[in-house]
Structure formats: structure tokens, C-alpha cells
Length: 271
Image 1 (spheres, rainbow, N blue to C red):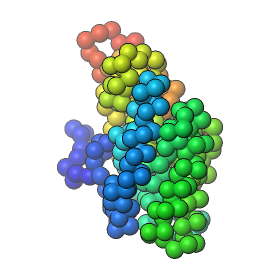
Image 2: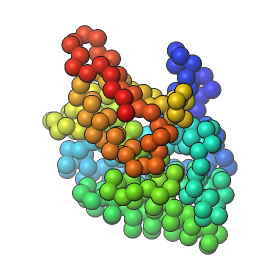
Image 3: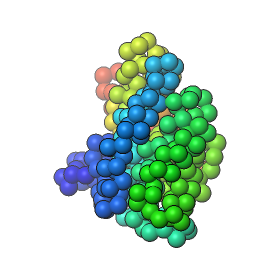
């Protein structure tokens, strides 16, 4: 993450292309492993076929995963800076450095169930991710640590689905970060293919998502939208992900309509 990142008010701004603020040796090693692993990279490409090519749904491939992972790590940085407790690794007797590894791996593997089907994909992601983790984790952990890490990562993957309640801060981060990938670029392909569903149209209305250090909460999420269709992304999707995430009191969300050329049905909403 660039040291110069910031907006005109002096807040620190986290963009989807920036890196984790406080990288450590183990996290960097795991991220390098992911980047070079043919099976994982193939999953990230293949999982988009059902979602985009066959169902004309929003992107759930490599770029989506990169954005979700980076925003999850940005949320981690901001919450850690405010001394928010991360109970997943701690309660398993794992090291503090393992918190970010749990988050990074869960973010990377949370959508691989799409290779089976978009519908109920989270439940297909669990066994597929488990197989990947059985191969990956022993590269970095002993047997006991592998079992504990695997459980925490799978819990976070499962709980990105709104039907399941996160029991750890790490899992709550994955749930919220998944909904923070909402800019217009995510819906470009289905839109160009004629997709005009509410998810596609509402994503087209979101121009920018920024994460800042908050004043009244550890995290401020600011969403710039160009028309009222973006309200669906914010009020229906992001709000649903934030609810019961365990992070409701830690994250403040504000969406602003930045379109000055037309009558604004919605100027500002705040969760």
C-alpha cells in the first residue's frame, strides 16, 4: 500500500490494487505460493464460466478474488490499528501472524464452488477448498496447526454466505469484503453481453469504493455512485453482508450520488 495514498481530507484511502499495509513473512510466502500455484489459478479462471459466461452474472473470477482479498486485508489493517480482537486464530492457539493468512486464503478460495454451480456455491466451495488446503497448508504449518488453520479458513468461507453467522472476526471480514467489490468494472462483461439484471445495473452505477480510517468507527467505507440504481448494491447487498457479521459497530458506510448533471433521486445514504 502506497504511503502517499490519501484523499483531500487527509484520510487514508485503500484502493483495490494496493497491497496489505503490514505484510509479514508468512503472509507474503503464502501469497507467492497462491500466485504460482496452477491448480488455484485455474480454479479462479474456471469459476467464472458458470457465473459470467453461462448465467450472465457479475464477475466472480480472478479480478473479483484479487479485489476481495485486498479489501479484506485492508479491513484487517484498519481494525487491527483500532485494537479490534481477532478471535479466530487466538482461540485456536495460533500466532497473531496467522490472522492475515486465514483472511487471505479464505478470500482466495471463497468462490471456487462456482465451478459446480452458482446456486448454493458456498456449500460446494467447502470440499473443494478443503482439498486445496490439505495440499497448501502443510507447506507452512505442522499437522496440528494445519488442522486448526483449515477449520478457521473453511469457517470464513462458509460464512461469506448470508445464511451463516460468522463466529470470528476473520470470518466477518470475508463476509463484508465480498460485498465491497461493487464498482462498475465488475459488471462490464455481462452488461456488454446484454445482461440487464438488477445486480448488473446497480454495479454499473458504482464508480468508486474507498476505505478510510474512521472518526466514529475504525473503518469508514465511502461509496460514490452515479445514479440511484447503486442503492441496490449498498442497501440490499452490502447491508445484508454487514448485518450479523459481528462488525456492525466497527464499520460505517456512506454512499453519495456524485452525478451533478441530472436530478438526483438519492443524494446520500448512510448505514
